[in-house]
Every structure is written in C-alpha cells, then in structure tokens.
Length: 467
Ligand code: GDP
Ligand code: GDP
Image (tube, protein in one colour):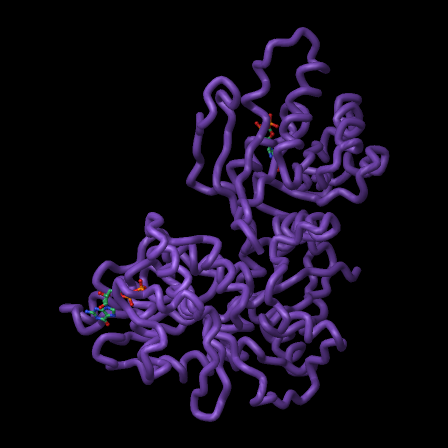
C-alpha cells in the first residue's frame, strides 16, 4: 500500500422531500457540519463525518448544487447528481416508499444507472406497514432490490451498512480490504468456517502485534522494553531503526511479530520531515496485526487522535488493548484511570470492556502485564461458539427481552450461527431483518460478549432474512 487511503465518500441523492436531509443528520449524528471548504464550488453543501456500524466516511448531499444557475429543473438535477456521484465512492439513492415511484425518480435512476459509482437504492419512510407499499414498484428503477429504511426512526441502518459494504466489495473497493498483509484472514477462507470445530493453535505461527499511538507516547521505549535489547533506540540517533519494520520476537515460548510504527516514524524524523502521526503507517500497522496495542500517554490522557486510531482498529476488526504509559509520572492514578474508562465508554461503546493495562516503559513497571492481556484478548478474538450453545443463549435472550413488534408485527430472531472468527462474526436469521432496531442488535451483541467472554472484542452481527 502506497499512499494512505482517502476517506470513504458517500453521497445522498434523490428528488426533493424523500428524506435526504433526515438521513444525512442520522448518519452524522450530532456533529452536523456545514462546510464551505471550496468557496464558490460547494457553497451551502452539507458535508459531515458520518458513521454507520463501524464504517466511517464523509457524507454529503446535493443541497449546495441546488442553486446552480440553470433553467430547467431537469438540467439542474442532472448536474447536481452527476457531480455528487462523480465525487462519491458510493451513492445512496433515496426514494419515498410511501409516495411510490415518481417520474422524477425514474429520471434520477436513468442517470444513476449510467454511472460507474456503486448505487444503493434506499426506500425511505419505510417504517410501519403502509410504509413499504410504495416500494413495490422499485424494481422498475433497474437498481436492484431497495434497502427499506426509516431515516427518521433509524430503522434499517444495519441493512444499509451491509449493502454499502457489499457494493463497495463488488467494485473492488472493500473498505476493510487489505492489499498488504492480511494473510491471516486469507487462511480462514481456504476452508469453510466451522464454529463447532476444536481449534488447536499452531504455536509456530507468529502472533502479530502492532504498537500504535501518537508520537512521543513511548512506543519505541516500550518496544525496547519488550524485546529486551536496544534494537530500536529512542532519541535523536534513531536513524538506526530505519530498517526495523517487523521485529520477530519470542515471548514465553511463543513467536511474536511486532510491528513497529515508531521505527517508521523515526525514519521520517531523520529525514527531517515534520513529525506527526502518519495515518498511513498506523493503518498499515493495524492491518498487519491481530492484536493492536494502542499506547496512550497517561500524562496527557486520551485525545481525539487516540480515538481515531482505536476506531480504526475496531473498524478493521482487530483485537485491541489499551496501554496507558508513563504511569510513573502520574500523580492521581485512580482519577487518571477512571477518566480513561469514562472516555472509552462514551466514545467506543461498541467494544465494551476493552482491556486496559497501566505501565511505565521507562521503569519497566507493569510491562509484564501487557503480554498476558494481549494473549487473553487474542483468545477472545479467536473464540468459536458451538451453534447449539449459541442458540440456547439466543432463546434465553429473546425470551428475557423479546424483539419488538414493528407495525403490529413481531420481529422474530430465529436462529444464530457463528460464520467467522477473528473477529467473532455471527449471522442472525430472522423475519424482516431490515426492521430490527439498532438498540436490539446492540442488546444481542452485548449479551454475546458477556455470555461468551468476548469483552473488548469487536463482535459483528449480520442479519439474514428467514421468514
Ligand atoms: P429532502 O428534501 O430529501 O432532504 O427531505 P427531508 O429530509 O427534508 O425530509 C422530507 C420530509 O420527509 C420531512 O418532513 C421529514 O420529516 C420526512 N421524513 C424523512 N425521513 C422520514 C422517514 O423515515 N419516515 C417518515 N415518515 N418521514 C420521513
Ligand atoms: P514514541 O515517539 O512513541 O516512540 O516515544 P518514545 O519511546 O521515543 O518516547 C517519547 C518520550 O517519552 C521519551 O522522552 C521517553 O523517554 C519518554 N517516555 C517513554 N516512556 C515513558 C514512561 O514510561 N515514563 C516517562 N516518564 N516517560 C516516558
């Protein structure tokens, strides 16, 4: 992988009043942003940081194009839309499931069908029974089966997420794709995944670990500590580390490969470049790793950059360990730790129970806790849950807290199976998967995590239709 990958861009298009703004707001959450980054071009255009599941992207709609000078509504619409989809990696084309297909929708569809950009057809306002009536004619648009959504009520978001991923994959744009070193993922595909199989780990196979974090949090110091010689030297003469990218190492009889972003960064430093966090290096390290150690400077606390890295690791489905370094220099230990826990709970609710290790790379104190934490989270990340146990649990979980009824019809989660490990990924078969509220998916995922000892692991749940 050469340059760092640009952030995924998602456009929302469709005729007026189908719910584009509403969906925009939902994807962006509270952090709605009005930007004016390219004056005269993107005037009034709404653009923001969106996320859906663990997918992060820039989302924009076509509002800013609406005042383009043109006489006909059709010409205007055409230009706005063409531009939006040209700029986007994927476009969400909204129709109004209540109103049904209009001639203007047909017009849009004609444009979109010609585009090389993957299109996700979304039938919005699909909450409730009457909500889906109008979507029946959607096949006429020639854009496949629509995703039934309710932007206003937040329904169908998981379906939307998966459809986006599917479309991107079909275009060879898998956002979770890895050009470089994701070979452990390939191993798995060589044979079908069997959740009931007994897995014997091959100790000769190295465990891949990446130590990531902002500059100066102590990555080099920690790696020196772990490896026990000065293979990576902290300090200004660090040009010596320019070749150490992946360091093979032995821990308690187990081969470990350590990916060293510090060395890469220091290389940049000797070359006199501005020292800053290189997103490219970090992403490469995260992709390389099975377990990511995110090192945080305990004196400074967790900041936005740290969160971005953590988010990335979770997004890539990696097991994550938070290591709070410079513990020797912290005065109020319990306050520091509690602040961090609060921050994690608020900012990364999707991975409850992330392991946190406090240590000092300088004095060595606490460093011995790190590898046990790494191995423990790795074991959880590799967890396989026998199908029978899983379904016994599902029965109990849905009994304790039944899935809601949507429009008078009860949602019925019927059956669950693990389809993958690393990270643990489950498929839930149910009627009307598009209607399952996210709160209920979250309930199930949290339950899975607690029951099967997968705290801190990015568990994934995909919904499949089974009427
Ligand atoms: P835009 O012109 O495409 O940006 O559409 P808006 O987001 O402004 O929405 C148009 C109208 O549809 C507003 O009154 C919204 O409240 C309503 N709306 C948006 N999404 C939904 C939905 O999921 N269900 C229902 N029933 N109404 C919606
Ligand atoms: P990197 O940029 O993340 O590789 O960080 P370095 O390992 O180069 O460390 C940055 C600075 O933090 C150096 O001055 C280290 O001496 C200091 N440092 C690293 N670990 C600790 C620690 O545990 N405690 C204290 N007080 N300082 C540390």
